[in-house]
Length: 144
Image (cartoon, rainbow, N blue to C red; front, side, top):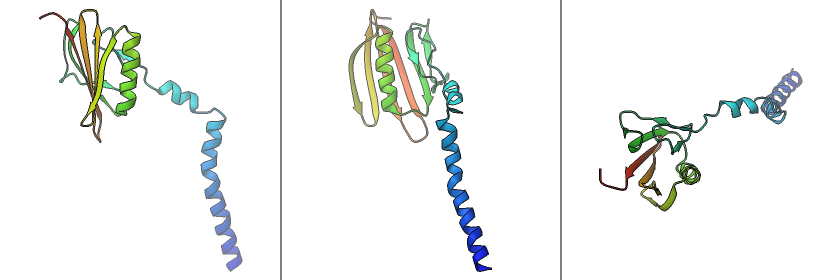
């Protein structure tokens, strides 16, 4: 009886160890990885026609204030690492014709400063345990 019990335990343990391998097998065969790539949200332009926003971030309409799609404050939130967001904005803003003026980190926030023709933009990225908050200001160079 003890041998039968020990044999069943051994078979169950081997089966339990092999189950995670099935999920890995599915990934190595390419099944499921295409679905994950297609389901990833794509970056898009929201209120500013020349500032690309990552697809993982959603607009906070109550905190945003935009005037004529040219200047104002845009707030977006999501669960994204601050450092990867900073790199995204540095790359995409450069692609859209913005020149980077400066950047710094202070008390857990990342600040990015850009200039384009007659406008300035600041991007502030703040990370907390629940979400990452991105505040984008675009202001004209001349007085309003």
